[in-house]
Amino acid sequence: MRNTPLSLKAAALLAVLGLALTACGGNSASTAGSSEPAASAEAGTPVTGGTFTFAEVTPINNWQTQAARFYEKANVLNSVLDRLTYFDTESGKLVGWIASEFTANEAQTEFTFTIRDGVTFSDGTALDAEAVKENLDALGLGVKSAQIQPNVDFSAYKGSAVVGEDQVKVTLKRPDANFLRSTSSVTAGLVSPGTLELDNAGQTAISQIVGSGPFVFESEKPDEEVVFTSRDDYAWAPETAANQGDAYLEKLVVKYLPEVAHRAGAAQSGQVDLVRGLQPVDEEVLSAGGGQIFAAQGVDLTTNHAAIRIGSGKLAETKVRQALQAGIDRQALKDTVLSDSYVLAGSILNHQAPGFVDLSAELGYDPEKSKALLEEAGWSVGADGIREKDGKKLEITVASSNNSVVIKPAFELIEQQWREIGVQLVNRAADNSFLTKAMVDDQIEFFGTRQFAYGGLGPVYAPATNNQTLNADKELNELFTREQAATTEEEHLKLVGEEQRALVLDKALTLVLWDEVQVYGANKDAHIDFTSGTAPIFQGAWKSNG
Image (cartoon, rainbow, N blue to C red; front, side):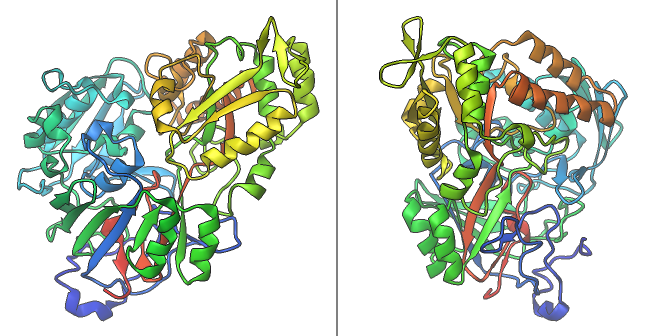
């Protein structure tokens, strides 16, 4: 599934070589009318050269690596920063990238990485074991003098040391079976020692971010576009990448297109080669016009869900939360709001995620069960049809970002469904200004979200770091601790399964909706695959018309 390493720019005159673009580690174009993505992008001989234009949703003004937890950042930094490891969706395994080998002790408290020879940052600095140690320290400990906080996925990090010439040994404060998986995240991207010397403000500028990736910053028009050029000497892609050499493309242009109604037209007309964030109605329009729809599955993320907060007291009882779970008609969401690019959730983890447990049989729509549970919890129907208890109405609020084009209409439908069981939903989905407050306010009952989850669910939901439930649940935290301390894959997956059942069914602290997917539109000439985090792989992208 991989090609022999070579510089494809040097081989431009040999385009008849017939190299095939495969789908290793990616997700590909979905077929109109099908609920599953196609097996691969259209086969053909990769064409070298040319400029590829990608339209993102909103401009980014902060490129600091550890803050790259939003698609707008991760989708670009994925092509600028390499990582120690790479999650290959085809095999479902971590594979080597900058670390050619990696091992862990049985206790999951020590990890050793062997660093590839010959890797350099774009400023010519060696990406050697010492540079890796500096990066790991910044990720695990933060940089206090630069006001940079530690990476939340590295919360167990204690320190690291260079062992020999090409190895780095990491020591954790406590066991963490998910640490290795976290090293594949864009937020664990490796930057040059010079970048690490900058303060927080310096590291927010994309022009100052020096990585070892296949693309290098060239120019920027604030709030309009960022331009990158490819590195001719790039030769250290993930070991399962189809293209083991430098990028086929000469340039990558990232433009911003916030108007959702214009995105399909921009792709179809050729103004852009790829655009993120299509509305379901525009998928059919673009496909019918000869364009392509790419449904990039979010294997690295939780499903789209409503994380429950109990601070207001209205959702403090488990039966109330379970009633809301049973009061969602997910099939109606699929039929009226979503498209064939979306897969209904079967758990808090996506179907393709390691350790996924299918709970869909217990997530059926049952409004009569909902009504009975609410009655048992003491919530009686009032004169206006909304349930009441102790003088309070069962009126609850949901907040979310506008990053999903379907999140607001989805909660509009849920609002109607819950009205039938006597619950009033105040829909503030896709209201970014309200979300800023809601993320830290446990009085706001729902946080519509999806979060990166590299292995277990503890780092997402544990109260020390989460902005999800904002609930301190002793039983859950004990379960998270046991999961992170698991010493075998079998034990780890078993505990990840227990986490899912606890969150979704037993405690109902999350109302799951659909698997995370980012829907991209492209013109007919674009060839591209995606990472397990839904980021476009521009190093392997190419255009039929050059």
